[in-house]
Image 1 (cartoon, protein in one colour):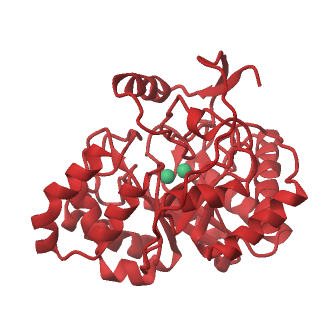
Image 2: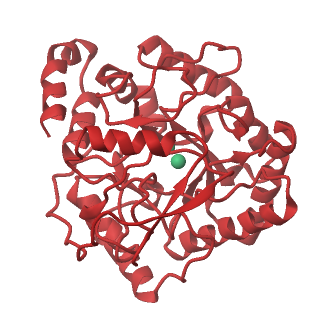
Length: 390
Ligand SMILES: [Zn+2]
Ligand SMILES: [Zn+2]
């Protein structure tokens, strides 16, 4: 591929991400679902040069960007890092460069007990079918290494907007969406995480919610078992998912409630009904409040996954700029009270670090999950030091 296609949103997201890369040279590639450097199945794992923060894109322009450097040959995944036995299943969004089956080696390399992946390019409407060898190797490897499909969370395309009132555009989104679900079923997966959509400024939120639910109902009938997992979003502009009431509004209209779930991303933090100032999950009280409101408005039984992200921006800024864990405005303490909460750990036995982490980050999260508040207070500095040094 002689050029890299990178999506540019109307926000300053891409610009911000590029400058952040320039300011702090990446010690590691960020191959999460925000990674704009490679389509699934092409390009090398270690050559990601652009980190783009996650944003819903429904009103996008596309820009052809010349690559700054030549692609290198795909690298072999590093040897496995130790995996921790814990009720939490922590992982990252791993690369599928070279084929979906390579996700497993990449997850093993960072000591992940869970992982996210793209099952096709997140930036193209159409992709080649999964190769038979990829499908069989994927199944073989997850079995061999003991990854439960419940702990694998594919991430959907950024192009899809099931809430678009334009029937033709919505149909195109729907086809891409269902194609993804069918790929997941081919791979023996059970969950599928997607961004709900946008009104594109052409309809009401209520109408968009109904359109999304209608698409989900159709998609559930066209497939057999995948649970469609809705992710919360930054509440900016026309985007759906910035408030729990949006997610509840979709779920209420879904006919088969067994086939719908929610992925809670710690950033963006929803504004929350009745919480005009937003939740401040940097504090334990804030986290308890957000979970309690989640339960009231949506129901904790729908919570299937967490995306653990720190943030570059202050809370309630309605901007979605991810930062490495412990290094943003949330701070490590936020992830201690999230990961050590027994109730969450038992009722929702897995989470996903997103964006990509090295094994240090995963190991730190596992250690924190077993620490009492006093133990964490005593060890916080050391943990932060380890994260900074990696
Ligand atoms: Zn996402
Ligand atoms: Zn996310």
